[in-house]
Length: 209
Image (cartoon, one colour):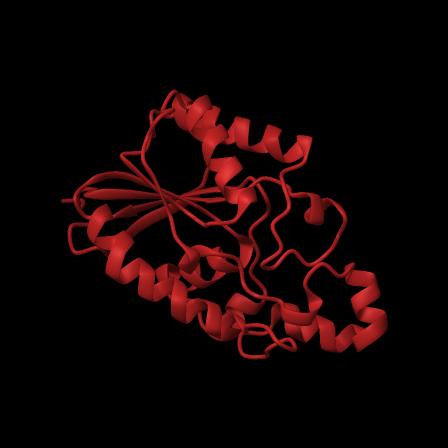
């Protein structure tokens, strides 16, 4: 007999931000969404309403692009007014000296291969910033201590966060190794659904947008 779904996780990357549109490193910078990003958030909320996946609880980053995305999603899903828990543990990876730099300009300054390794490597750290491994340490600690116990009460938990935050979390949920996660990415506006068993193991996952 198939194992029953006990809880659902909805993982959403924020909509396109101004620095995304400028092809710059966002990191801990705090840009707003673009019009395109607001449209992505609207469509995400409409998708959740269409699939009757309205959340029972919501977690997000402290940064504006995630808070704006969350508000738009909840309005579009007819869930306005829900309590939203914002926490710095879900903030984007700190890119240090790369923050705000155009990616082409960064490649010219530091070398294309070096910048690529800083962006994609699991363990390499940009000057003054965090590696993906560092990011994973804080994200997973918060997930295990705070998000997962809340999620296991049942229903649907929405997490709206950043590309590298999601890479770290999905690495754990999917059992990826460092090599696999280096080639993995999540586009802006993407919704991923994870179905969890009563022991919190992943039964199945799918990409909704």
